[in-house]
Amino acid sequence: MFARIWEAIKATLAVAALIAAALISADKLDHEKGGPPRGAALIDPVVTGAILPPSR
Image (tube, rainbow, N blue to C red; front, side, top):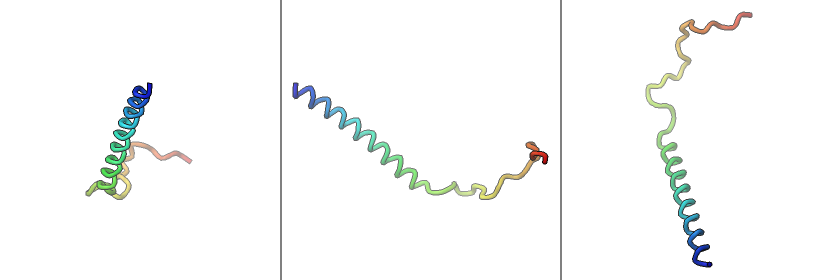
Protein backbone atom coordinates (compact mmCIF):
# COMPACT_ATOMS: atom_id res chain seq x y z
CA MET A 1 0.00 0.00 0.00
CA PHE A 2 2.71 2.44 1.02
CA ALA A 3 4.75 1.49 -2.07
CA ARG A 4 1.88 2.46 -4.40
CA ILE A 5 1.41 5.80 -2.67
CA TRP A 6 5.15 6.47 -2.79
CA GLU A 7 5.28 5.68 -6.53
CA ALA A 8 2.37 8.05 -7.17
CA ILE A 9 4.08 10.79 -5.15
CA LYS A 10 7.35 10.31 -7.05
CA ALA A 11 5.58 10.45 -10.41
CA THR A 12 3.73 13.61 -9.39
CA LEU A 13 6.93 15.26 -8.21
CA ALA A 14 8.72 14.28 -11.43
CA VAL A 15 6.00 15.83 -13.59
CA ALA A 16 5.97 18.97 -11.43
CA ALA A 17 9.76 19.24 -11.75
CA LEU A 18 9.54 18.95 -15.55
CA ILE A 19 6.88 21.65 -15.72
CA ALA A 20 8.87 23.94 -13.43
CA ALA A 21 12.03 23.43 -15.49
CA ALA A 22 10.16 24.24 -18.71
CA LEU A 23 8.70 27.42 -17.23
CA ILE A 24 12.07 28.56 -15.88
CA SER A 25 13.71 27.85 -19.24
CA ALA A 26 11.05 29.80 -21.13
CA ASP A 27 11.41 32.72 -18.71
CA LYS A 28 15.18 32.80 -19.22
CA LEU A 29 14.74 32.79 -23.00
CA ASP A 30 12.25 35.66 -22.79
CA HIS A 31 14.67 37.73 -20.74
CA GLU A 32 17.56 37.02 -23.11
CA LYS A 33 15.62 38.18 -26.16
CA GLY A 34 15.02 41.60 -24.65
CA GLY A 35 12.96 44.19 -26.46
CA PRO A 36 11.84 44.51 -30.06
CA PRO A 37 14.07 43.01 -32.74
CA ARG A 38 16.76 45.20 -34.21
CA GLY A 39 15.59 47.14 -37.21
CA ALA A 40 11.96 47.07 -36.13
CA ALA A 41 10.06 50.23 -36.87
CA LEU A 42 9.44 52.29 -33.75
CA ILE A 43 6.93 54.51 -35.53
CA ASP A 44 3.45 53.93 -36.90
CA PRO A 45 3.29 52.16 -40.25
CA VAL A 46 2.84 54.25 -43.36
CA VAL A 47 -0.79 55.11 -44.07
CA THR A 48 -1.86 53.54 -47.35
CA GLY A 49 -5.46 54.71 -47.43
CA ALA A 50 -6.74 51.15 -47.58
CA ILE A 51 -8.84 51.72 -44.48
CA LEU A 52 -10.77 54.95 -44.50
CA PRO A 53 -11.03 56.96 -41.29
CA PRO A 54 -14.51 57.11 -39.74
CA SER A 55 -16.60 59.99 -41.05
CA ARG A 56 -17.74 62.59 -38.58
